[in-house]
Length: 515
Image 1: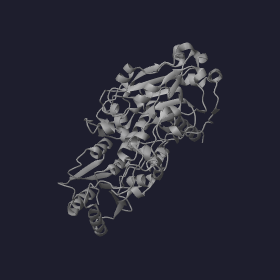
Image 2: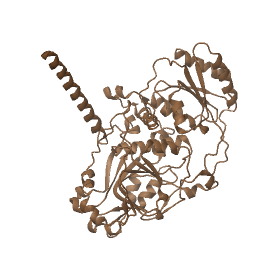
Image 3: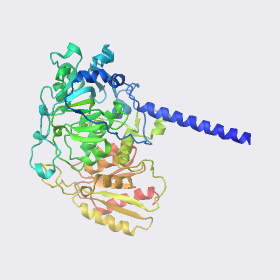
Image 4: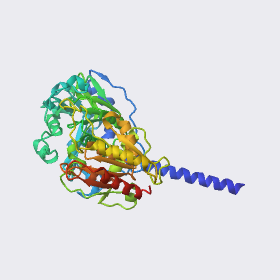
């Protein structure tokens, strides 16, 4: 009996130790290692010096990061090979530039109580993620439409009205002592030219924002509202297009990880766009959402993060430069790191699925009991934004004929059960769109933004893209490659697809799935 009890005690101790090690590894990888945390926690003297006129916003619980099978630690301190897959999709923001060092670095201690500001630069993406502490936003110094209206209210509004124009002092950082008496500029032209380059972007709003930032004294740092939780600032351009919005989602996610946020941050849109269906995913991914111009007066942030434009992500840059990466599983890369492989897009897809409450540990291996779902992603007319006429450009002239033929063929297919799903995304909520993507064994569609949803597909999903002669672009073949998905294409001589050819290609795919 004593021997049995001793054996049970040993097992319990082993399990306790194993669980403790796992927790330490997980939370260590999420820990924000930067130095200003200790400084920002010592607020008693600082708050007396701030002389805030407004009310402090009470703390709210932030959404935690979900546990994901494809998660790998993010650490800007690790050595990353330039132009490697990890540099393109993960930890490439390795060069740190302190524009305004924290008080602890300057030796001011808790008495200094000033703000701080720094950027992390990626040589590979030629882009920066910036963040600051004790940052003030003055909405009246940002010229743009209010944003967040219903589409019906703003039909015909020009895009120029919806993009921000930052006046001097639109954003301010609290300085220390006499350092800020002349309201000096935070970022020099030399810094901007080196770390926030315009490149081929017509209007680089993050660069314009940084040019507006001034360092001010505490007697100028008056706030109507104080937000304690980390807040992520995003400027959207093509906000109604799924592909471009996914680049914005990815940029915001990477910014959150690179800056080591322990939970999902709040979000503020630095644009004046109206509401759009894609906003549902923004709200699901992050802890809260507001528009900059919806604030009625100056608002201060304990910690503000500036997300790079979606045009500066690997998803967009891959359209014009070669990013030779292959998707791989996180466990494989954990055991055997490889500069030419990545699990980051799979990690990102799991974040989207988890944000809507779907399980992320489903790696379809066995034959589905209820049959294979074949999702046909459709293009349909709808009004996307204030300047849109409601007609989408046709990429497959006989789309309905192809769908009807597939439906008839699937109903008579005898090898296994096939469920043909009519992917009319314009009439689905974002949650429903993600659900049909994750449940699909095969995803078919003409080249179009809707196929960007394959970032959320499960590892065993097969993609079949129908490409007209006018739209031979690599968007979705690249996403499939970077996720490690099986990909096939039917290249058309024009825009008409012979239904028999589509059925033949689909039959071959299903046979490989043992169907």
